[in-house]
Structure formats: C-alpha cells, structure tokens
Length: 561
Ligand code: ARG
Image (cartoon, rainbow, N blue to C red; front, side, top):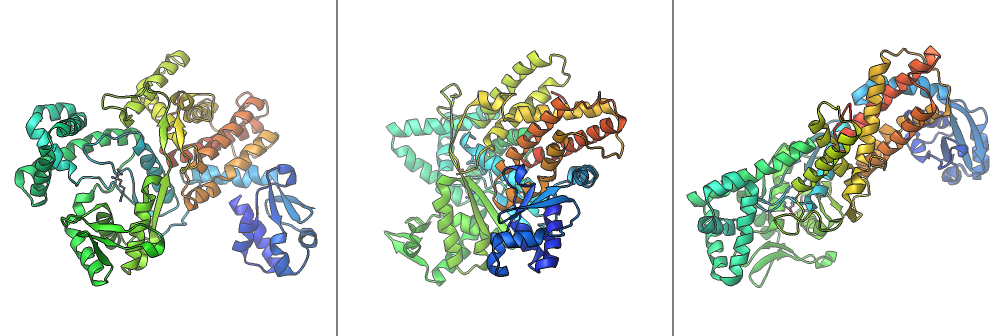
C-alpha cells in the first residue's frame, strides 16, 4: 500500500501542488473498508486550499485516475480510494514473490549506524524473567533496524563490576571450590552470593572483607582478577545457552568494567565545565533546574557509579562506532537514570546527546508460584523456557506423534511462544504472564502463528510449481493480499515507534486472513488450473511474509509442527 499511497500522492500533487511526501502521509486506512481501502481526509487541506473539505474532495475526485486504484468516491470531506483487485493480484503479489526474504526491507537506514544496548544482565546474579523484556525487545529492535538498512551494533553491557565481586570472592574462598563452580556453573555462583548475604546478617565484618577484596580487584590484584574473569566467563557461558535458544548473538560483550580507565577523562571534563558539585563528600551534577534528582558521579570514597560508567561508555561508543542513534532497552524502573545521564551528556556539550534513546518497558509477573525455582522467588529465563518446551512436547505428542525432529520443533515453538506472548502488547504495559495462554494453539499466540506458517509450507510442498497467472476470484483472496501489502509500512511504524508489538499483531492479522482463505477457498483441490496456481502463489507469499516477520521478533520458523 506504500506504493499505492505514493502513487495517489503523485497524482494529487499534479493537481494541487502540495508535496508528495506530505500528501502520502495524510492518507489513512479507514476502519471500515466500505469507506474505501484508503482515504484522504480533505479537512487537512482546507486551510491551504482555502476551500471547504467536501468541495476539495469533489474536485479531486473528478477525473481521478491512478495506477492500482479502481475508482474513488467522496463521503463528506473524505476522498475514498478503492483498490483495483487486479493490481493486488498482479503487481503486489509479484513483488512479494520476487523480493522473497527481502520483502518488507528498505534502505531507510542506509549509511546510518545504530548501537543497541540490551539484555545486559548482572554477572553472577540470576538471569531471570525480568531480563526477558530487554533481551527480546532489544533484539527485535536490532532485527527491525537491520531490515531497514541500518548498520547495527549490539552490545551486551554486562554488569561485571562492583562490590558484588568482592562478596563473591570472599564467599568463594570461604565456602566454595573450583569443582563446585565448574559443575554448578552460574547456579553455584548465585548460591555463593546468596550464602554471603545470609552469613553477613550474622557476621557484619564480612562486608568489610568484601570491600577490601573489591579494592584489591580495583588495584589489579592478580589472584582476585583471575577469579573475577573466571566468574564472568562462567556467567557468559550460561547466558549464551539462552541466547542460542533465541537465536541472538551480540557484537560486543564489553561490560561496565571495560570503562574503568575511560571514566577519568569524563570526570575531568565535568570538573572543568564546573558541573560537578560536592555534597557530603560525594560528587554529583545538580539537575534541579530540569526537575530531576542530582546525577551521582562519584561516591564519597571516590569510587564511580552506574551513571559514570554509562557516560564513559556512551563517549566510547560514539568514538568507536560513530552512531547516528544509540538505543538502550531497560525496564521503566531505570527511566530516571537514563534521563539524568542523558542530560549530563548534553550539559557536557556533546552535540550527539539527542541521539541517545531510552526504550523502557513495563514489569512482568507470573501466575502463581508454580514457577518458583531453587534460587528463591525469581523465575529464571532458562527454567521458563524449559517449562514451555516440555509442555509443547506434550501437546505435540498428542497432535503429531510421528514428527521427526520433535525436540527441535518443541524448542522453536516453546521459546517462540514465550517471545511472542511477551511481545504481543505495547512494551510499556505491565504484563501478567500466563504460560497456558502463551501456549494455546488456538489463541493469538506464537504456536498459532507457527502452525499457520507450517500449514503454508505443507501446501507449497504438496502443490508443486505455480505459474504467473493472476486469477483473483474470491473476496478472501483480496482481503489477504491487502494485508500482505501492508508489511513494509508496518515495519516502518515498528521502527519509528520502537514497538515490536506492531509486528506480532500484524502476524496475527496475516494468519487470520490466511486461515479464512484456507477454509473458504479450495487451494490444492481447485478445479480451474489458473485458480489453483494463483492460490498456491498466494500461499507462497504468505510464507515469505510470515517468515520475514518471525525473524523480526526473534521467533524461529518450522516447516512442520
Ligand atoms: N545491568 C543492568 C541491569 O541489569 C542493565 C544495564 C543497561 N544498560 C546500560 N547501559 N545501563 O539492571
């Protein structure tokens, strides 16, 4: 429809001279297709054309002719356009088939670089359901930007620095063993961390010991550094298992510690510019003028803080990647933190401060205590995925016991179900996660979408070759084509609004339209050869669009379920 909007705008431009882009952006999709497939609300033009909307609509309608538009009608101040079905069946469908895996992509971001900071868990702490949002929203935004031609750099800004490492080192020396950690992995680290907190309730001097060990680490003590590196390695190995299930790879794992030697330069600039104030020995930037609490830069003992590291990291990333946009995906709980340090970067005089974007998301809760794990009340991402995979396995055993690669499919569907369910709402909305809802094959879910994709694959496999014919005969075909034609625009909105849910909702629209078509129109059994061929071709287009859309939300495709 993208093209159609442009086609229409180009024709209108010839009669009223208003910029084509601007005209295209005024064209809307009426909620009810009786009011046209596309519509121009003429009141948007009335001031400039110095005429009443109905008379503008009437004069534009007279003699209107445009490729892809069958006819126009006026309704009050609206000019309504009705699409030519043959244009959909020919032009639009051919384009989808021809472009295949690149249908929906664009060169909107050509020559531009986007740095995305997401997932970024804290080392040796559990990787839990709270990280699901940053991980999947972040990766989806990466895929979307890449699809639109941006060069993307994904960064896992690991929380790999701070006093918790002093605690871990103390706990490890007192109660741990190399063997425990080698076999237990991150769980063994978390257990040590938990034990430290229990013991330090009784024995306050442990906190001092931990601080001493951290200070030693800060000064490069060899044995502490070796332990610290090892803890990070163990943690990353664990995270990567989860990332692999999601199909996620990072370009960089430079965590907070990497910026240790990059902070002094920024602190110096803050000082030179007179931005740093001292308060009870701590150094901070006062942001009262901007209605925000001060941004803390140094503690009273001179040690740096989370915002200090973020400022140094942003400068480093600008210098290294020369980004046009830097996106940070975290829970809304960190919105103030980002607003504060973004402001500090601006006050420091960095011109690119307005290229920093924080993308917040709401909280997740889980139904019941069923998912509680060994580590206490938190639900580990790993366990959530495992539960989903198990349940899908069970369902599949009932549905299709003969499936060859059941484990692989169960993983794709189980993990996909969680991702899809999570990304089904506007990101800022708080969600209560109900696993059974996510796994319902008959709901607006990942499994339903993957099942539909597999159905298309199976039709194509049985259907064989299809010709070039464009014999459109049923309303369901037209409806489906109209939806397929919207994909490029949906990708664009998902990017401009930073909202992957625009894609998940779109996937459901495609599935619903395809399933309606599938139920009402015989495909493989169609008697007329041209109709059969056209319907198979339409099915091939559905497969492309769904497949491309799944990629954008990090949901895997499976040809069979
Ligand atoms: N490690 C942080 C946490 O788990 C998230 C880091 C987000 N990225 C950043 N540059 N601050 O809360």
